[in-house]
Length: 173
Length: 337
Image 1 (cartoon, each protein chain N blue to C red):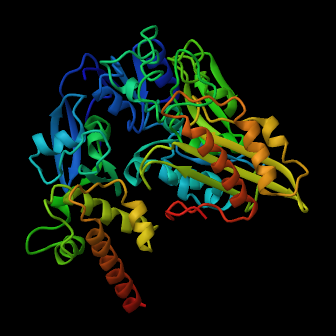
Image 2 (cartoon, rainbow over the protein chains, first blue to last red; image 1 turned 135 degrees about the horizontal axis):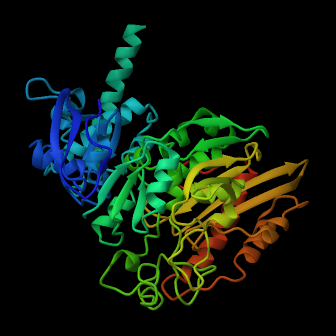
């Protein structure tokens, strides 16, 4: 569904409709608002973090129409009609996503600031289906920096979820 | 960032909206333009959103080639079965660049149009002829470790940052363009330009012209290819030097070779004369070294990037060796085979 006007001239707030974590949201925004600022400042979904705000650190990673992207480099107005999943949409206390549970089990964070982006990125990476070895995981997760250096445990957590998945698939056959 | 916004309904609508406003820009993936706007390097008054245009398809061409829509995301292109099977050099180069998140957002056309990552171009407090023509080049005598060794001018030593474009240059792609005066095609080697005394111009597009597709010629080079990228980190960094190498064998000798360099010039660097030296030769390190000597004959460092000349020489020999042996560099492998 697309509700916003196709021309906004001069710049002024306009209506935007998005599905965020399964819920339809209509918000008035200026064309210059990024998806990251919309999520954090307008929808108060502060799980998604602002690190570099330049597409270099991956802390702002969210899943848009099934694809992981840097929300800091997306203009929200351009995402009208899209479906966005943030860390809040993956799981909640008591009902964790398997990737969230694996990050806890493997101690895959210290300060935790990069973690929502790491988890959104890892979940989408597994759906992409191109990572099987630890080398491939490292390469395909290189857009998510961790200044605490928890990389070893992050790779372990992701490998754990991948092997859980493989066991499920084998059991289903 | 203050700008008006228009969501284009058609290619014609997009071209008209940009052509009539010198301060308007097309926007698709936005991974470079939005970044540059945050740095105040780009200050468009109007953004024309082309993401809803029907330029997302793949089309076989009459000559056995493949036409790729300008809005195909970099990741979709790299993992497309036809690209993996018929143009693995291109798939490999794309996966050597950026991060998975950026490749999901960045488009085929946008990759061609991304701007240099020269530190001074990004820093509006410093002179830069590319950003502010006539203001001077800070890199010339500044920190220039990442800068050009080939084809630079007194005005600019910036490099083109793309990996994908290096493979497209080697493969001899064609760029399809639409503009206010109609459609045209541009050979890949003529798309990007050298800085000369107009470094503000990265390419040969006129204002209002839009990339609509990139066309690959019929597949060649079989298994004999490699994309070797050398950089300061093992992943997610721009090339200091990269090499796209492809060889078509004719029995025991080389029929045709292609070598394109990234990270060393204002555009992907090719020299058909250097490539021609391999024709009829049995692949060997000495034959590859002769190609490297020729490709780099005009190379010139600017102090901190002097090392790139030797690095490029070694990378060319190594990448051609990988291509000849049909053991292409694997981008998730962090050792050079």
